[in-house]
Length: 278
Image (cartoon, rainbow, N blue to C red; front, side):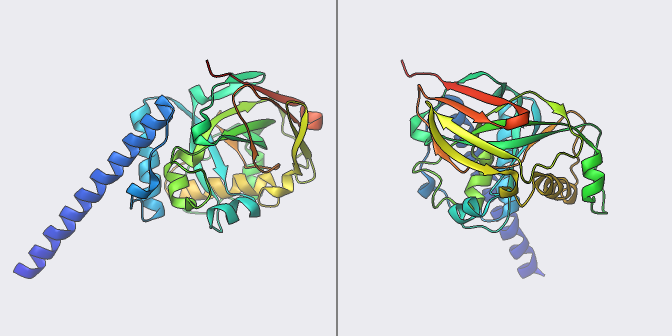
């Protein structure tokens, strides 16, 4: 009995220490995002699991005291999954002050190695509460209110860029979201986004191109993954929340002073001008 009690005390201490380390990492990452710098990834041996990575992300949201407005889903393309050495997507919470309407002026930090992606975003029209039964694609599509094109600005608060960071550190770092700029919303009527093209230009020079099929074969598949992933964690989607579904164009690096256009055809154009450093 004494051995069992001693073992349980060790487990309790380990849990407390793990929680302290995770909270410290969350604080460092939030300060890096708030103040515009990076931290050394090699100093952190946490998180070790997906659950811990999402725990760090949630702690950052709480530290920020900023309202959430939805989610971004990352590593939805084969290229992104190879970059992060994963075979599954990951999510990040979107915080309202970092979501802009096009045309947008956004500040970036070169040290965070920022890049842009063209992607589709859905707006949810009615609540999708968590449940034990998986949602079907038809149920989810029926709950979509609107769709738009968007440019996501991504970059890591860990030094050295995205390569080699892996899915866990990327998840802990808020899905490496810096900002999201959305275009004009249109009613979702089952448009075929799989074959819908997106073209990026940076300072007038062609950048990445692709179609919606780059994101898990269809942006709707991404939304379906997110809804059921959240539901498994006893979290639902609420009416009015938005979901960015992952890159259709790959990653195009950007610097202060760049002007980026993403052409979404019938969905219009999204524009970001990145502020110059003083």
